[in-house]
Length: 96
Image (cartoon, helix red, strand yellow):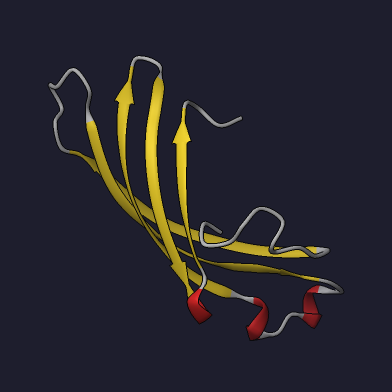
């Protein structure tokens, strides 16, 4: 969930769904430029799956811009969720 810090959502169980799209704006360029967005819905909770309540799940929206460079992708992402949660992520190279 892009609007949350690492470890901010934790529990014995998790649910997650994402719909994303992106497009390349300069296909024949030396450094292709990409734009995109995603909608996510999910969360984590302790206990059984039947213990989940609607407040355990969060909707999140993200927009990103990225470059495909010789050293790997360079991506800047901004994300927002309910109750003022937001995050900005910068990625240089591939994630493992």
